[in-house]
Amino acid sequence: MKFNIVLVEPEIPQNTGNIARTCSATGSTLHLVRPLGFEISDKQLKRAGLDYWHLLDIRYYDSIEELIEKFYDGTNFYFFSTKGKKIYSDAKYKDGDFLVFGKETHGLNELLLEKYYDKTVRVPMISEARSLNLSNTVALAVYEALRQTGFGGLLTEGELTGRKC
Image (cartoon, rainbow, N blue to C red):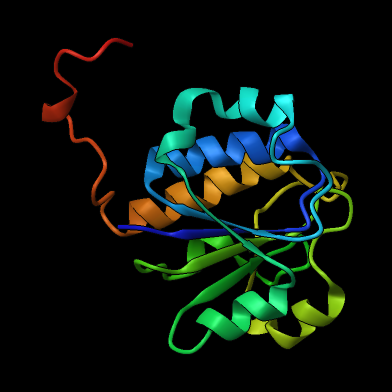
């Protein structure tokens, strides 16, 4: 199983580095939509990804519209926002889906959310909380999608024998 993680205008290099590591460990493709709030060579970004960069499939786009135009036909997109009506775990994920996340300070564009409201999902939290950390939200989302699809392609219990903790 393989999922597509989309970060629209990410601002914090450590978050993107952590997400890159999650993508590497799960075989997910990372799609970054410019402008980025950092350089890909940033030390913090590389440090957060540690030694996983060689496992990462990373792609770049100049706008979210460019990415949607390229992939939307026949592919599921889920847009993550605190404004979503549906809970992220109620979505029915399948291999190849795109999980789309906005920038840390503002989330996804309101017009985008309005256009794709039926595909907008949220992570439940108390009303006083503004949002979760972006890298935590991506990890929740991708592992829920993997759980729903049987964790295909990830190590099974038998394959873990002999690995260090």
